[in-house]
Image 1 (tube, helix red, strand yellow):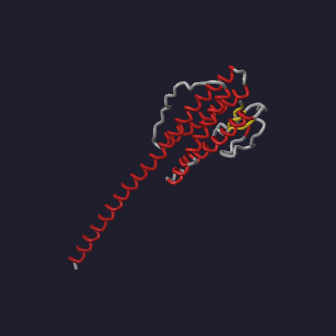
Image 2: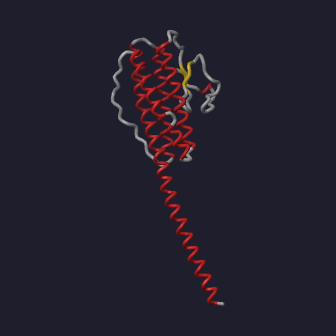
Image 3: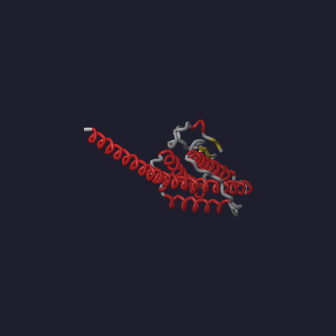
Length: 213
């Protein structure tokens, strides 16, 4: 009887050891998978924050050029877009640090600023190219990795970038000048002062908090 009990104890011991070893191996594999998921997310955040930083500097340069031409309507547009891009950069920077990464703003040399009309055309081409190359793929990767927080940020940025294209195209084609622009301080969504939502459709910020240009 005692021999049988000892055998049962030894059997249970080895079963328990095997179970612990299996769980340990699985946790290692899961940990590596999680690291790879966060790495892809952090890489996407770095790409978006760096692009936003560079674009904000370009818009600032274009705004100065518009001011020299006394084109104050388009100067306001470039200033509004620069502010929106800085909001995007800060959102991505905060998310990067939240998930254990580090962000350093890239060095950006002076962008050649020609006429305001040419700067508008260049901005439209750049915004279209950036939007077509992403097509929400970074947000999709964040969702697939289970990171809904980052996915929401990237969806906001994609939506704002589409809005930037519309505003730039309108400023390039329209003969009627806008009286100014509004920027949501939370997500960077941008509007004409003549037409805006009571609440930002992306982040639900009230229009009274929008920054006016």
